[in-house]
Length: 315
Image (cartoon, rainbow, N blue to C red):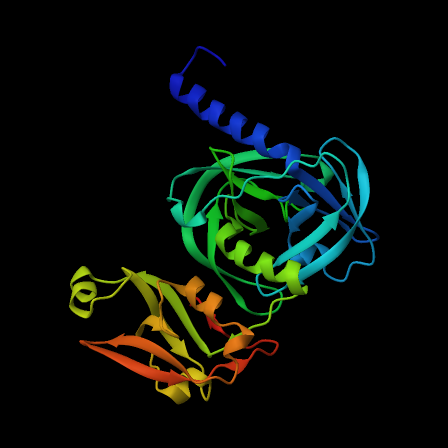
């Protein structure tokens, strides 16, 4: 490193270290007749994370490793609602990228994006976390929650690549940029991805139920937490309720704070999504809300998810 500005040296060292740790795991994904995207190996036995929109409808998938060797891959499963997909490649000496904890991210934190923009293999860009808790509409029409906004530059072909912190852990899957803007890019939080991936590997898809509301993760006043003996200091603020949906029929109102469901504490939108599996479809389920000075238990019967339905979306 240069002996110049020590702040610049520290910044450079952090970017270099993160890139060196994760770049061997980054792959190029080619879809015959349609273009390419990025992905990264996350298990030593060849499971690769990428975006659903990169591989959706693909007839053939080829994966090129960081060293340049190419292999045919197969689609394990995809979830258009979170824009996450898993493919598998059989290749020797694969290096798995370590997954981090996106809930620990802070606005302003250094992040590094690695991918194959416009076909340029293993390109590295750096920036900061610009905002947390953003929402992004997936191709299925569902809002993806708790999306990371960053100014680490993304271009076509970056989709599916890792967003990495200085320690070299993956905290997001790069998914989109706003073409008419500069420095506004998005990544799916790795905590959301981790929940989806286990189901994709097991079943090839994600089964869900829905309750029909839009909400956002918000902090709860400490005096409210103490008064009601809440387990968490954040909750889901109900922004709107779908007319005639399960939540509306149960009496959930805009302005309610959802603090529990099915006997479990709810700290945010991700918690609701994790609970709203197909196991709750048609099952009367207690949802606990704080409404004004009251804590109220309501009985919601989740419905099976259909295309375009809202389980719970961030408004």
